[in-house]
Amino acid sequence: MPMQMTFRWYGEGNDRISLSDIKQIPGVTGIVWALHHKMPGEIWEESEIAEVKRQLDEYGFNMDVVESVNVHDDIKIGLPTRDKYIENYKQCIRNLSKFGVKVICYNFMPIFDWTRSNLFHPVGDGSTALFYEKNMIQDDYNAMAKYILDFTEKYHMSFPGWEPERMAKLDELFRAYEGIDHEKLWANLKYFLEAIMPTCEECGIKMAIHMDDPPWDIFGLPRLLVDEASIDRFLKMVDHPCNCLTLCSGSLGANPDNNVAAIVRKHCDRIAFAHIRNVKHFENGDFSEASHRDCDGDTHILDILKAYHDCGFEGYIRPDHGRHLWSEGPGTVRPGYGLYDRAMGIMYMLGVWDMLDKLEGNKMESSKPEFLYHGSPYLFDIVEPQQACGANPQESQKAIYAGTNFEHVIPFALPIRWYPDNPSGKRDFTCEICIQPPQSKTFLNYGSLDPNGVGYVYKIRSDSFTKVDDWQWVSPIAVVPTEIIKIKVSDYINTVVFSEEAKEIHKKLYS
Ligand code: CS2
Ligand code: MN
Image: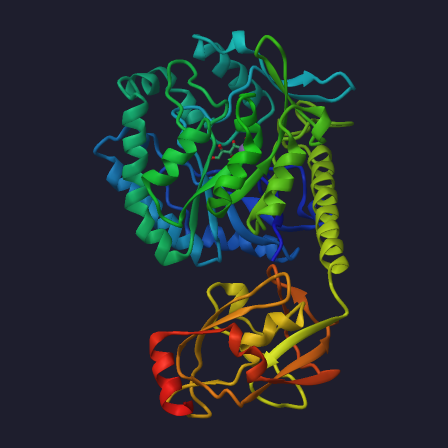
């Protein structure tokens, strides 16, 4: 399964972009959604979720990813009332799982979600983008909040995490967070996650924490998920497969020291959701959001995509913020969430991804020999797929396994039998395949090998085979061999290493 492309949508009546617009963007299979009228701590009712599902079904989109189920401040602060809100959160998880939701994105930032000083800053080419002016975000949180809230009021749109109801009590909120330092916030995050993990496991839902944006403390409020070390700490703190990341390249990328591609390579199995956003830095510490094209920003989008591709990422991905283009401006677009730049971002990401797929396919194809070899102690006219039980999934498929060289498969051709000799019995051996001919070794752990016996190597056309590791190829379908070569045990007995038990058996039977 390849990665799954998604698009964030704010819901009917709340987003000027329609599902039919989104349907026209190539490659999008899922909508990243939320019940945006819900306050943190409220239960999302099944009937409300069902309504969104109905809307998405009409366009064939899945609703696998929710962004966000916001976490109540009492949980972040660690008040006694948190347990009640945690119970509500668990109920949301259960309700969402009934509709097939797989990933819940959330954040654990005190008071504010992403924070910017200008929502429509000129990029220089006629477009605008979200902008962070360092000097503007220092001590006066009220001025910053006023700027954002005036905007939301003027244009009748509220932003997730910037609920006017919460923002109206900003001073009170700041007082409530007094004394909440980094360590207390970490402890409260741990408490929350440990409480909900069993429910997540039961429901098959991954919690995917979003990175803090920007990735540093603001207005004296602690921020936790800011760099590689804090991500390591987070994953270790609650080491559960349902405790995952929303790795946001733009949030982390606001700090030029963060190497997002390296984090992808380190933790790919715990990244449930990838946000791809590009950021351009200025020398004085300000930054602007940029197009997804690698050279338009400093986030190294190509390295990040390559890392996901190399790791075989199968999770959800979306273009995060984009610029505002053409007719998009204040009042006609949600800041960061226009249609055009995000659609172009998707085409850029898919372009890169498809080319990486193609290059990888070419590499595989070009190293594919015309013929492969399959070893068996038995003689058949047709080679059929068999259930293998190897050490890893690649080696445990129901398939025909074949090697590039004749010599690779000798261990599998040797007529090793269970002792006492039983034609349907298990064979107990391991082998060391010599990638370069001439000799592979067979370690006979237990059982017998008739020194006068014979085995078979099947030479088969490689057409239906794909490569699974250094030397093995698999075909899911039966193949008629082009040649069947009978081998004599006596020619290979010097490649077999007998265990002490096998030596005993050998002596008893054949000496
Ligand atoms: C989003 C975040 O717009 C964005 O940057 O990626 O606001 C994100 O939705 C929240 O932090 C997740 O809770
Ligand atoms: Mn993001």
